Image (tube, rainbow, N blue to C red):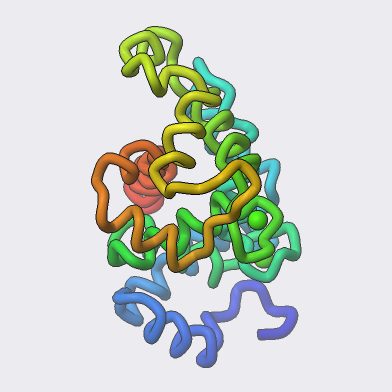
Length: 203
Ligand SMILES: [Ca+2]
Ligand SMILES: [Ca+2]
């Protein structure tokens, strides 16, 4: 720790990340060096994160979605991603278990981080996802899910909720695990693809 940015990964962080991920000590050291090279400050700022998304979706408007994904990865809410948050995100999206991925999807949809999801929050995320789907691809979507509103309605109906109800994390994870259809509707594979790309780029 401390001021020396070129110093190795601290022992505490290394042990923590070895427990939290399946990465080896060697992999973690390598990623840390690459991370520092790309982010000498030791932090990824939201604008940098948005720029990465923009480069992967040049014909779309991924800004809102990138902001939501950034928030879901910024676990201490301090406005930047440090190495720990970055590695946890990378691990989660590339080799995490289904339950962990759904915990993350829940965090993505829980925009105000209050521990439950409202219909407005579903609409907000679905809208940001639609900003990344090309017009052609949108035209190929089924009639009852080809607008953000329709898709949010469909997700909401699946959970059997009234307009002002909320979905808890447990309900969300169980519901999605029991139904592949709703898994497709909440669609969180875009960031996964981006992360895969980042991983390839950084290796
Ligand atoms: Ca942070
Ligand atoms: Ca919420």
